[in-house]
Amino acid sequence: MKIDPFKQFHIVRRLGPIMGDIFPLAQKLMKLQKENMTETETFEAIAMLAQPIMSGLAKLSDEDATFVLLGLCSAVEMKQMPTGNWAKLVHDKAGLMFQDLELPELLQIAGRAFQFNLAGFFNLSRQTSHGVA
Image (cartoon, rainbow, N blue to C red; front, side, top):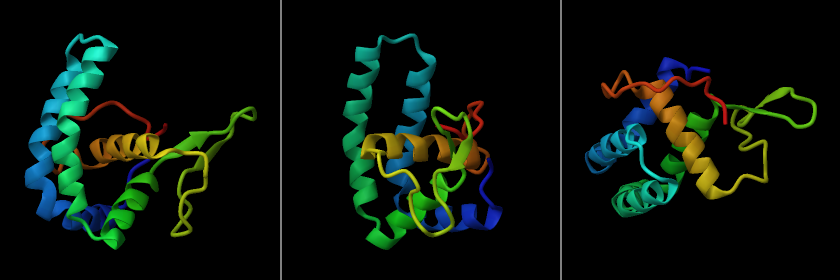
């Protein structure tokens, strides 16, 4: 599911001041995804890149960080088990609709939504995705 272009604008506007810290790392992560690395090697590589990413994100105000995460996750639907129905991860501004998500999962979902929705803006290679987790 695509994010409305105006919401994309506001997400990019909030991330703009920290993109210099994060953009080169996002490119490295995408290259790692294309390599045939073991799960352990991939985890170790991501762990090394996590510090600069987290430092960049720490520069965001709480309000901006919440806006970005909810904005990105608003494009995501999750499959309900056992019914197989799909439900939005974020409903309007009410917040997360699934309270069992942990932070690593939420960040991974937001990262995929970012790549799917904003890859063209940053001239990144798009991954084929349906915006689902």
